[in-house]
Length: 65
Image (cartoon, rainbow, N blue to C red; front, side, top):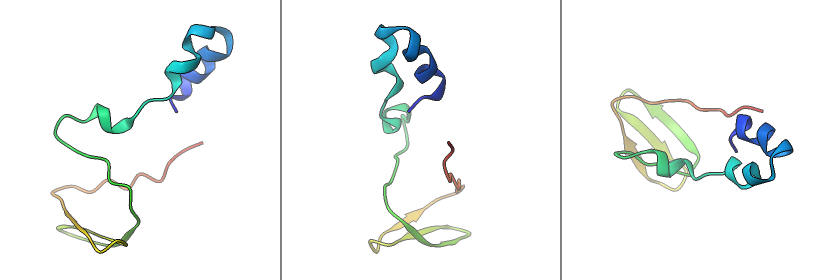
């Protein structure tokens, strides 16, 4: 949910559907994995599903309200 768009959606009916968007569509050369990280090291992250995501940089995004 886009917080700023949500406020406008309260007063402008046309904006009510614009506050939700797929974050994966914002990335041209990346992806948004949906899994739980169980281990992070200098080269990537191991996931709960048994996968491995190799990375040069890791961003810890805990969310917001």
